[in-house]
Image 1 (cartoon, one colour):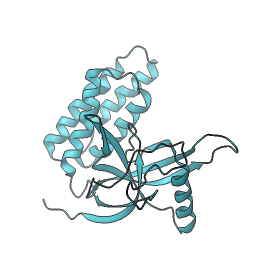
Image 2: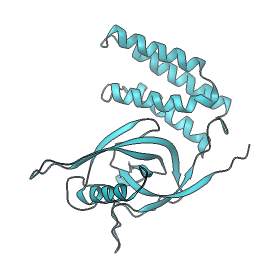
Image 3: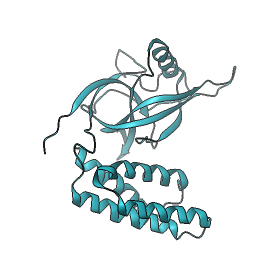
Length: 233
């Protein structure tokens, strides 16, 4: 089924590796002074909370580059450093919907965060702490739900992952019961709700088990992401 895709140009907030932001989730990370100043100026001059493109950097074969996928996001909070300290600004973003960059060659570099230089500056003659990028907005899930085979792949992978956590005796009984209930919800989820549930599961797993995912669990964790990105391409 053919669906219409909308485009827009948004100021870019690049996320340092290995951080990612998902729809409906929140993320806090340090940012450079230049980027913080630009964000504050833009927010103060806008009638509403401005919309940004939050896109992660990824590493492959020793090279760091901007990923093709990201999310629209709004600023939830900016924490200023204490006076006369070397602490960086802390930015909290709230993810909204998934987007795709039309051009991944945007000339940005990973943020140094605690320096006075821009973390997302143009490496050429026009440094910009908030470069604008053209993004494609994904259609609503109800308009273009994922194919049934992708939904079944997701459910099988997600339930197997959640059952592993439900059987993890290092957690409290209450937490194990919570994972089991989520697995039941996954099994009953309709196709047009599954993508949002996948984002919620990945956010929950990452928050609860940042260092406890075994290699097998990592496979399922990443598969949940990949199988739902496929239908948006």
